Structure formats: structure tokens, C-alpha cells
Length: 269
Length: 302
Image (tube, rainbow over all chains, first blue to last red; front, side):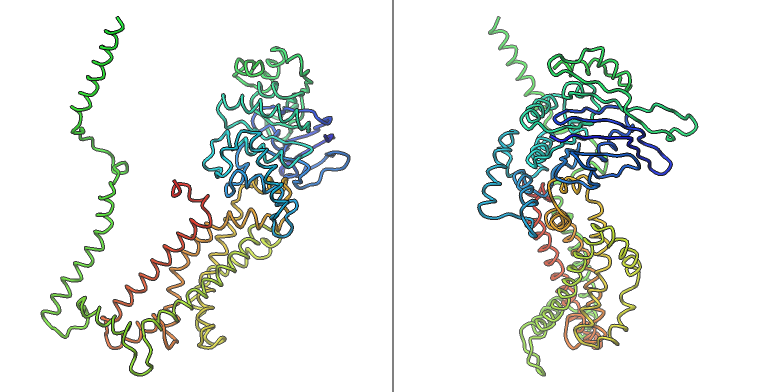
């Protein structure tokens, strides 16, 4: 629902350059999959979009204005771990949003507002299949259930942009497929712009409408961190005709993955 | 065919049972020390053993000394201690008409809990501010780190000079003695909060204050209670030190007063009484933690 424009983005940590000359424009409602070798800066890119880190140079525009350099409700995030609040039960995790937004100085809503928020939260729990776990703490939920809760929580906040940082990286393959379906359904319903970082090439092709590969163009053998990564490959996918296995193989070769077969299998699933 | 198949399966089951039965006297496997578990009864026995050993050693030594000299004051018999303790608890003092044990206990506990209470409030507010707000951290963390290494007992004369010999000085000593370490500990805990949680809370609409209320405070609570439990040890130390030097009632005052008369029959029960109070406080704090933060004790709930 919001455009993202990134122009000439650069990120350095001291002498080490992580990202350089990153240019990309995401149209509202696009689903961007970011792939690349470990440590290539794709997560840094996501954290910059989140506002958790600031770029060293370049411009990031979200919607029609410059990005606010701190996390805001405009952009929702699901991390691989630590994505739900361990001191709140499933339903309390969802109620927290209304508490934060209209709870005033106590950070808590009361009365009719609370009842409405509860109704909405219960509907959302039902939607992601966690109705039975509404009063459980995250510690007693499985990894997949925790991620479902995290996604529900983030979506209930109605962000214009959804950021996903390897959201399914820690899940079993079976659960992962289930989560893919859930995410695709929710994305179709809400229609927000999604940026997902993943290690799983198959997942990137299966979910995304566009696959971006991050890699270094220039190398300095004496000082490997002299140059940063940038977007080396930008592939738009047609939702109806799935990506060909040549495309998958090409991207897999760029990222240097060894599990090509499973990537193609995931894409087809 | 089918019947034979079932028969074979049954035979197999029987064979299995036989093996299980034959194997009942479990083969003696020597487990490593770190893997050998303790049964419930065994744990109880082992836990009680040190108490029994100390009690027995005391009884034997005391019995020997009293046999040699019935007027011995150093190792009084349990009966002597009990009667002295009962006197202090139930017989009004001749001069003041007070029940000494209860007056002492009340005075000491008020000092202890006021001191620790003040320290807890300071630790909570300062600790969260230092851990959560970078500006406050830059402003106060170096100062608190230095304050932490000042030995509190060295401050006692200063407190007595500036605040007089009254309650204020004693409570201040306890608070000053335990607060700096608690502040640092709470600040550390807040800094350890996963950045992911703080970022997420902001994307859900939290501001600095509501995040303190709904994220930091509940997350810090279990650690705060642990902090108080650990602080109570030094707090008792400072209490008894302050009472020994300048006081007119209190558990520490009494012990140091009757020391002049070698009244071990009062000192030993008082030490036991202080121990009991400390154990009860500790247990109550553990219960409190379970009530306030059930999420932090998942095993206990099952």
C-alpha cells in the first residue's frame, strides 16, 4: 500500500562497507524476496527499512516522504526469533497493539474499547489457527505457533509495509509449507507491500513477486570488507506462470546454494 | 496363516515380557557422578544430613562441657537456650515492661525493610532509566559504577555524623549499601532485552513511557525479585553493624549487648531467629515472583 524508493543507499561500519549503491523501487503491493550469501547485508538492508539502523548515505523514501529513522507502526516486522513478548499470553500479545495505540499514559485500554479489541484479537487468533492457545504463554507454544502469533500480531497492527527477517528459518519443513500458505493468504487479503529476507531460494521464488539478489560486484582480495554488496539481479515473477527452474538455478548459483533440488521442489510446491 | 501370524506375534510379546522380567534386577551400570540422579527420599536425607551433623556435634560438645562444669556459659544446653528465648519472648522486661524479643524483631525488620524498600524503588527507577535511555546511561552509568566500589561500612561514621544516631542513619546505610549493585544489575538486565522486542514494540505503537510500563517493567520483575533476595544478605549485615554501634533496641543490638555477659543462651537463639526470619523472607519473595511473573517460571506451573 506504500511505495518504497531506495536510491544510492550506502552502509558502512567504520572502515567496513556493507552496502553500496543500492537502488530499488518497490510498487505498492509487491512482494520482494531478498536473497544472498550469508553476511551480504540483506538483513542490514531490512533493518534500515525498519528504522532500527540508519544508512550512511543515500535516500530511502517510504510512501511519499523520507523514512523516519526509528521503528514506527507504518512498518511491521517479523523476526526469526524474539518476535513475540514472552511475558504476555497469546491474546495479550495481540491486545497490546490497542493498548499501545490508544491506551494513553497507562498503556492499557478499558471498557468498550477493550471488548472491541478483544473481539478483533480473537478473530485474528482464529484466523491463524491459535484460538485454542489464546491463554498460553509463548514459552509453551511450538516454534511454528510462535511465528504464527508473531505474524498475527504484526498484521493486526495494519502496517503499510511488512518486513520479514527469515521468518521461517527456524521451522521444520512441513510447518514451513503451512506458513507459506498462511502468509500468501494474508498478503492477498491485506495487500500490503512485503519485503522478505530469506536463505531459502525456493521460498523466495514461491512467495515473492520479485526476487532480488544481493552480492558484491567489486572484490579486494587484500581487504575483503572494502566494498559492499548491492543488488546484482532483479527478477520480476509472474504470479500465474511460476518461475522456470532455470531461473531458480541461476539465482541459486549466484547465492552459492548447494541445495538446488530442494529449492526447485519448494518453488513447485 | 493369519492365526499363525498372530501366534507368532504373541510369542514375540511373551518373549519380550520374559526378557523384561528376567532383566528386572537392573544391571549395575556405574554412571558418571554428574549423571547419577538422586531420588526424592535420597535428596531429603542428604539435605537434612548437614543440619543433623551440626546439631549432633553441638549436643555432644555441650553435654561434655556441662558435665565438667554445670555453670558453663559457652555451650548452653538446648533446654537453657529455649528457656532464655521463651523469657525474652513472653516475660515483660523488668525495667521497661516490653517483650524484648518482639520489640527487637519489630525494630530490626522496620529498619531492614525500609532500607531494602528504598533501595528497590531507587534500583527500579534508576536501573530502567539507565538501561533504556541512552542519555541517562551516558550521564549516570560511570557514576553508579564508581559508587558501587565504595565500601558502605566506611560510610557509616559519615552517616552517624551527618544524620545523627537515629533511624535515618541506619536505614540510609542499608539503602546505600545495597542500592548501587541493584541499580547496576537492573540496568544490565534492561540492556540485555533483545533489540528485536524493543523494535517490535515500537512498530506496534509503543512510545518510550508505555514501553517502560508494558515491556521493560514486566520483563525486569523476576530479576528485580532475585536482586532483592540477594541484597537481603548484605542488608542484614549492615543492619546488625549499625545496631551494634548505636541503638537502643533491635536484634543486632541485643546480641552485642548480651555478649558482655557471655550470654550464649541468648545469642545462639537470636542467631537462629534471624536465620529463620531471613529464610521466611526469601521464601515469600520466591512465591511473589511466581505470582507476579508466572511466565518466567514455566516448569513450576506444570
